[in-house]
Amino acid sequence: MLEIKALTRLHIGPVTLSLADGEVIAITGPSGSGKSVLLRAIADLDPNTGNLRTQSGVRAEMSGPVWRRKVAYLPAESGWWADTVAAHFEHPEQADLTSLGLPPEAMGWEVARLSSGERQRLAFLRLLERAPDVLLLDEPTAPLDAENTALFESRLKRCMAAGTSVLLVTHDPAQSARMAERHFVFSEGQLRETTHG
Amino acid sequence: MADYIQLSYLDIALASVFLLLNGALSLWLQLGISRNLAFAMVRMVAQLLLVGLLLKQLFAMQSPWLTLLVALFMASFAAREIWARQERRLKGWRGLAIGGGAMAASVGVVALMALVLIVQPDPWWHPRYALPLLGMIMGNAMTGISLALDTLHTALSREQRAIEAQLLLGANKWQAMRPFIRQAMRAGFMPSINGMAAIGVVSLPGMMTGQILSGVDPNEAVKYQLMVMFLIAGATGMAVTLATLGAVRALSDDRDRLRIDRLRKAQK
Image 1 (cartoon, rainbow over the protein chains, first blue to last red):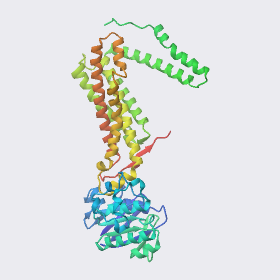
Image 2: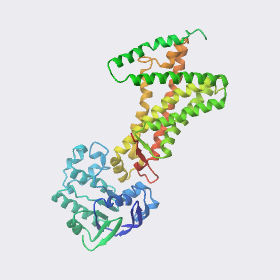
Image 3: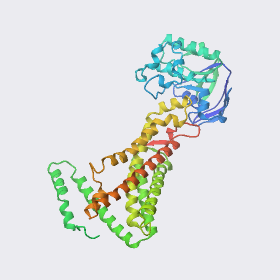
Image 4: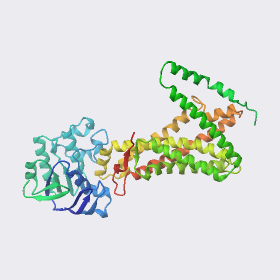
């Protein structure tokens, strides 16, 4: 569950939105309209105002790090700080690599040699380790081929079945229609619900 | 104490012959550095003569307030120099205050201790002791801080994505920035460590050389040099630590965000 009341950041908002447990909403919008700025603000990565909460509690009553474990943001381009993949995981042996079409030995790979699609899938897996209440996904399947996109979507459906709410930014209308029940357009700093994806 | 060989201005002119020769050579070879060379030389002569006059006056007047004023002038010049040597600086008052504050605090404490407990001149703030000590410690702390802050600010801007990736996984700001804090502090400490390692073998420090040339017993000169080196390294270490931690605080906030927006690139 995620509840956002009057979220503002720079020229964006106020945005008010609520997601039920296991619900997926899809957001589209022109490039540069600030979709990533919105996601960063929800994750509390930039200064912003507004009242937010999940089933774990109210944002204002949690520290930034605790909130970000609950509200997990996957940026369009992931960041890496160590040489090997495994160093980016808390429990590398428990990561479900095969569910996303990655071989078991991927944990030993060097980050510098990863393709953008591999990076994206591994960054998603390392987010899931924290068992977040909410996933904020910024064009997660943009670097993936059709086969891996399908794997990614079915992994996402498992998260939804477990009660995770998902805010999915996507440029793909078909994906939006497949995954989400409610569809939004983000432009000029405002979120508007539309009837179709 | 007057058993050292006094230099006349003719002696000094004689010492400058080789530099003048270099200037002539560069004119002849059209290296284009003769102007810079001449300017730097004139500037050095003027600055040192002036400082000599100023120190002579200060020693004669023995005013605590004037001594303090000169110390403050040195500190503000050093603070401005720290600021100017960073490629990316903190915006606003923090840009000057963090480097300058860290330098003033650590140099102040160390110099005060050296004067009151170690050298113990009478009075303890005697400009003959206070100003040269301050100058040596401050110069080194200044270099250390500017290296540390320049390294930190560059690393944080370049590694923004990697740092934010850790923050997004629930790391706090200290965990996410630790490698870059370490890197910055190492850069700040390096000149002091290298200086201590090479001293006496590769280089005879200028202060000690000066003392020996002016007739001081080498053992005594070594003792003074050791004291100065300890003070320099200690003050630089404290200054680098304070400045780095201060800058990390300024570049993050209480929600453990990375605040790269508080940095600005220097215009060249």
